[in-house]
Length: 200
Image (tube, rainbow, N blue to C red; front, side):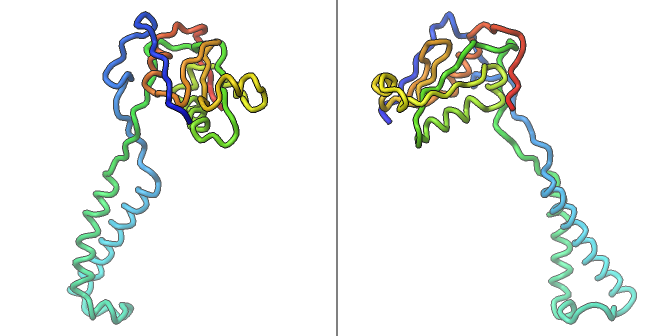
């Protein structure tokens, strides 16, 4: 693709956005089920090993224990001691995801968005994925994708500039979408309706 082009928005169209042009901070995901399972399993396994060691110490040799338990008894006890805090640490972990952004005013912006694209265009796929992201799609109309190779005039106009993203008849991005400028564009545009689009 040729050199990327991003149209700067006039100051009159842009509202001040905090820090990284977004509101809110880090959002913690709920604990994944696998993390809970591994943490609980480690705690129970460690407790079981220590319980077996205690029963053997105070109640004599246990007949059901395999031979390798007695060969490495100290190692198994140490392993059990380590498993309990390890399990607690696993359960206490919190995963972080990127900050979720939203404009200061709710409502859908623009009446039409077109993405001029072509087959086997990686940057086009990236642009479409970004526009489909729920934190942006909720404030934008459904995206119309236009294949420039199906129209000689469009192919001549855009050439290697795809993806070219058009908002209400005005090209705002070519080559790729700058996410920061996309946020500024959404924030600085007056909503055409208070209803938000719910992407499927």
